[in-house]
Length: 482
Image (tube, rainbow, N blue to C red):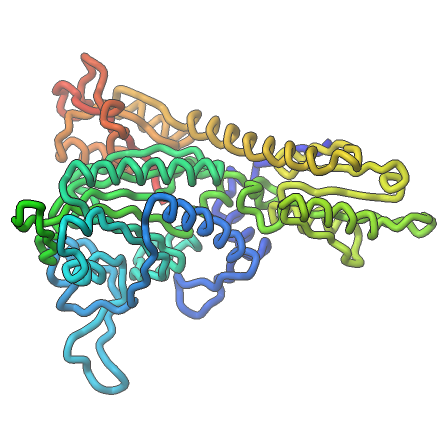
């Protein structure tokens, strides 16, 4: 029986992560523009499997797919002042066509509100057009001035999902936010990723939003990674872009809008949360190869292990599994190393004795456990084991997340948590921006916000804000973040 090692994964995470992305065939970082990476075939296949689930969720919930241009005129970008302020330091400008200056400068989209909403004002006319729900998966560009990190902090987000909706009133927009949270929860379970949702503080909400929600996972080094956001804009963008609809009574009202966003950070989270010192550990739901079969021939054997392996592969393939038979002329140990590195959930080993006894050896990637199964039961055993692997990945990650959330009452206690193992610290808070920013400064950490739904955010009776000493209204979450 094997044993999972996670020492380098937790203690040298940055080095482990950067090395793994290339050795496992996810991306190549050597593209000659900093912060822009090349997707390799294996990595793109994993990402496509994630996106396939997102597409199915969007179809199920009545969102229609659109595709907008990447260039936005400066005139449209300027219509929403608060949005510009939030992104003005990050945009890439297009100023010339050949040698000729453009009459109107263009930007490469950092996000699509200012691209889409001038069109929404043309498309949405009547209450019968609402709710209006569209989405796209596109490239977005942000001049990231911090240290870039592949799939996490980049200058070209190449797999950016954004859903945009318009509604007749605030209540319907709130129902959309609830639906977004339900979609995200299903996606997170599909990826075996436990997470927390926080309502961002006023000073850190999305530019132009009425409020913003962020979903975070816990990384191996105790930092958090935001992997999803939901924003309720109220009528802020509708007024800037004149998005109105005619009511049943003939009046004209501005729509209420929401957005829901995710990116390739989802894959970064999967790699980081589930991995170990041997490489990736992919949930069976998104693994390009769910089962790899390794024939182990012996020169003196009279049976054909390759034919036996292909026979098993054919049966598993017909049962709906993604299967590959590794017939390379290299040692079995090298094959094990390669597929463990790539995170294939299940390995089946077959040698001459297995052929003779109508058996096979199954090796789980998550626990490195090996056991023998009967050939006739192999479909059921594979299905059961893959389900167990998914459940184990989720429960292991959930335990890790929960063990890294600690509630304290003082700044000193919070500092001790960050010195010890980082994670998320929850502290009573009066609700004032001054005290919140002071705690961020003292802790050298970011306020994620308050727990969401809001009934989870209320501070227990009698708790005091550690900065001003006043009665605490909320529980505030702080973390070191990516």
